[in-house]
Structure formats: C-alpha cells, structure tokens
Length: 116
Length: 116
Image 1 (tube, rainbow over the protein chains, first blue to last red):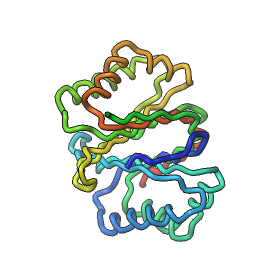
Image 2: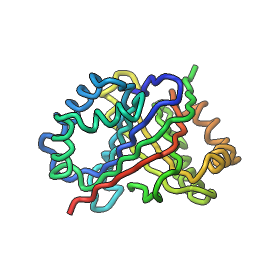
Image 3: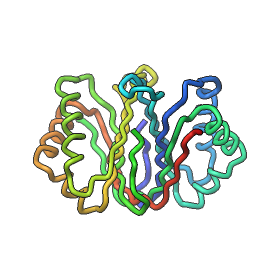
C-alpha cells in the first residue's frame, strides 16, 4: 500500500480530484488504469486514497489523491500518451471528474517509519 | 479542497500513512496540525484523503495521503522542527501510525481541469 520506491531521485505525479456523482464505469476504469500502469516502462508504484466523507465538503463529491511514481519524465510522458489512458482521461473530463489537478514532481528525499 | 498553489516551481511533502487502531487524540491532532501549518511562513496549501475501506487491505488500518505545499525547503525544515509538530510526530510514531513514508518533492509542472 505504501509504494516501495527506490532511493531518490525519482518522479511523482500527484493527481488530486473531486468526483461527480456519475459513478458508472469509474471503478472498472480505475482498476484497469492501475493494471496498465504496472506494465509501463519506468513505473515504480502507486498510492491512492479517497475520502468518502463528502458531507465534510458541502456540495462536492468524494475527494481523492492518487500518487504514481516513475523513473523519469519520459516514462511519465509515455504513460500520459498511452492510447487507453488517453480515452480514460477524456472520459474522466466528460463524466467522472468535477475538477482535478495534476502535479509533476521530482522526489529529492524520502524517509520511512515502521512501528516495532 | 484542491490547493490553490502558485505557478511552479514550489515544493510538496507527500505523507503516506497506515494508521493503527488507536484513535484517541488523532482527530484533534490532525485538525490542530492543519491549523498550525496555515500559520507557517511559506505554507501554500494542503490536501488530504483517507481511505476508510480498510477491509480492502487485510489486517491493515486506514490508509491516508496528505500532501502539503511549501515555497521552499527552508519552510519545510522549519515546519518539521516546529515544537508542537515535533510532539505530534513523536506521538504519531508511538500511537497512531503503524507505518508512514514522507517524500520531499520539487513540483516542476502542474495543470488543472474544471468541468464547465
């Protein structure tokens, strides 16, 4: 669940989204995209959480954060241009997402904690 | 809910965590830390989502991602060393978190979508 990434530097794509109330097809697409990403060159891992307590935010759908990790900007570019992913992105804008923000980041340092 | 960050470059701290079943004090601490962060020099925003479907992950507590955004590494360093935050970090390791990973990142590019 916490991605087992190699030592930095590597890249992260932070995808923050607010969903619409249109649910049909969303779950299947999300599962398929994670599956596809795993097969991409330079893919290092993915972490995802969605807040189901949308009543905390008046009028808005569920709020989610997905972070995927990549070896290089080139690997991110190829994933963004993947044919099936392009269709998912377009369908996302048409139906599933009220809004989103994507941030491309260079991970410079990381540290971990595991309880005894 | 989606942080209204300035144009890149700026910094992101991705904090990915798995909670224990020890809930006492956690909510108050989380609220207080967001409040405190807002008052820190160089703070640009925060986004947070926690997956309550912990049954998806056999044996593990809720999985969460919090991303905070900062103007500089120096702002991140000062936040990490804030006295009240240091206590929260220690109590987190003692009680609330089974494991976590923190990643310090330079946001190089971002783009947004808003449905019409």
